[in-house]
Structures are given as C-alpha cells and as structure tokens.
Image (cartoon, rainbow, N blue to C red; front, side, top):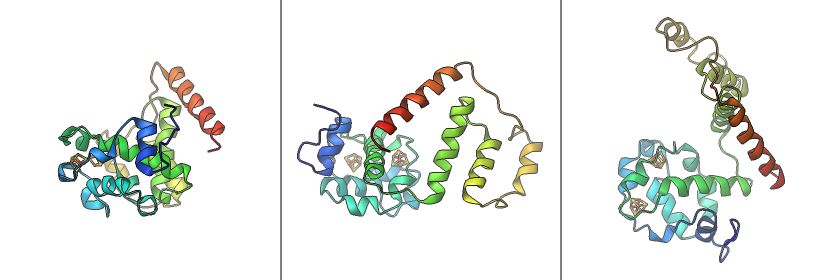
Length: 186
Ligand code: SF4
Ligand code: SF4
C-alpha cells in the first residue's frame, strides 16, 4: 500500500493509509481523555476527535483548535487499552488538515515555527531565542516581559545559544523535509 493511498477516500482510510492505524478500533472508553494534560483546554477531547474521525467528520475536526493543542506527550497512547495510538492519529489529523489548507490558529503556528527554527539553528531549544522569535511573529512584544529578569537571575534563561555536535545531521533532516514539502506543493 502506498503512503498516500486512502482506501475509500474516508478520513479513517486516509489515517490508515498514512499511519497503518485503525481509528475504528477505538471503542470510546475515554481513558485517553482522562489522562490528557490538555483535555481541559480542548473543546474536542481526544476520544471525541477519534469519534469524529470514525464518522468522517473532517470539517468539524479541522475547523476546531483542539487538534493543534495536542502536545504529542503520548500519555493517551500509553493509556489506551486497545493499542489505538491516539497521539499518532491526532498528529496525522494535523498533517491532513494542513493538506486540506486548514490553518492552525496564528499563535500556535507562530510557536511551532519559532520552536522548529531553534531546533534547526541549534539542534536544541534556546529559550531566549524561542521567546524573541515568537514575539516577533505574533507582535505580542511586551506580554510576560517582567518575568525575564527574574528568570535570568535564577539561571533559567541563557543569553547565548548552545549548539549540539550533530547539528549538521539535524540541518540535513530539515532540508530533506523541506524538499519533500515542496514536492507536495506545501
Ligand atoms: S483510550 Fe483508546 S479506545 Fe479508549 S477512547 Fe481513547 S483511543 Fe479510544
Ligand atoms: S498526546 Fe495529545 S491528546 Fe494525547 S495525552 Fe498528550 S496532549 Fe493529550
């Protein structure tokens, strides 16, 4: 089966083709939601996202912010009694949402881009650069600014980035991903 084969064109079929995972195996026990650290913030809880994927309700899923709030912490996947892997499925739903031109909320997109830029440049997160980059992207320059001096004094924020040894490898991975995205027209 090719990566992009979608069986019957349904959302569940597209998830299956991309990940090999079966959303129909979810029996809505809710254990994933019970352990999810972000569930309180989500208007659609993890088990509800799975249900919407089962019934092919992609519009409802893609118009909601909830898929973008997932931290990919995999608590839900560890708790699922049926091996459904909701964390991977939600990640796949985000990929499918992007392909369908559904955009993440502006602040979440800005945070993702700022985070990835730090990883590409340093191979790890440089918190000061991450915050500065995020603020430039959102224009939210002064929010939380009073917290910075205290964090600097306590050594929670470094002023200069520290790179990693394998940074060349990391940059090659980014270049390969960018090339693949260009081929897909993203
Ligand atoms: S824990 Fe697994 S089976 Fe239960 S609702 Fe979540 S995904 Fe479905
Ligand atoms: S991976 Fe996402 S959905 Fe699963 S527990 Fe973590 S934040 Fe919640």
